[in-house]
Length: 355
Image 1 (cartoon, rainbow, N blue to C red):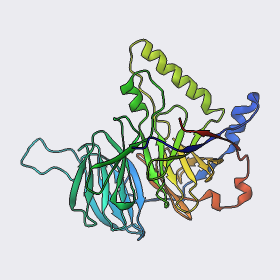
Image 2 (cartoon, one colour):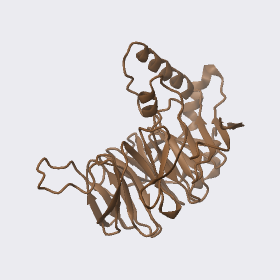
Image 3 (tube, helix red, strand yellow):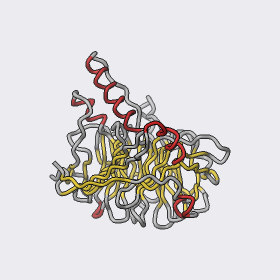
Image 4 (cartoon, rainbow, N blue to C red):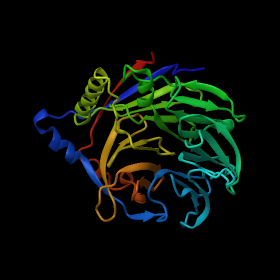
């Protein structure tokens, strides 16, 4: 069992501006990014995940419906695995997916779905037949690893990530939680998050509810590598206020109801750049963990777009919103470099060791 062993490079992305002009300058740093078009119009409400396989097929998960839909590169529907609540009539078959939170696809085309409604990782054939299920309570996100392993994140248990081997048994657990609440059960829930895997089988874990937006990178064995913390002058006061509110509510015996902070994350398979969304603001970090640029997202008709899923491709971004659907954006970092240089915030780095 490895719990974040090894050195970790902690990168703090900060904007250093004068207090009197901070809000104005920060707004100027956010470039506007408008979608070119909407894709897969049949998918909208409940959008959870967008994945792509080596053959160029797209796997789009939306819950509670329509479920997992596979699209060809041209947008044609190839397969649909439906989702829904089981019938009260025991004679009727249960839906293949009850409530999907995340999905992934392996090199052989097998489809993996994190089914929170069934407390199981469902594994489907390329044709959509259920092959097996791995029991796992309080499931959230999943990512595939070499050797048929599946990494999952949950809102329970002592670690952030649990890895199941090809036989469905727990192979290892890793990742320590951050201290947010004095209540262990609430603290674990506040440390829940979702994952993305890159082409080198590194795992990126985004803390969904941590007041300070944070992403950790692990290798496939569970060693911590890099931690990115977004600490702009706009975000830090909000994070501090959130922590104070949690303490206040707990002191009065009340249960805090936190709002999700990081709403989507994607990783460039070529450059290992990390993209995270805080609702409609998209942040791009280079492979060293430095904040490169931030963008405000809009639909083709100019409506604010709050991201719930990100797929980073070489020439474009696919960004999903609930209930808006999936939108195609041109890669702003691949466009005119002079435009992207405008107001680019700098990051500060410091090395620490994992406790």
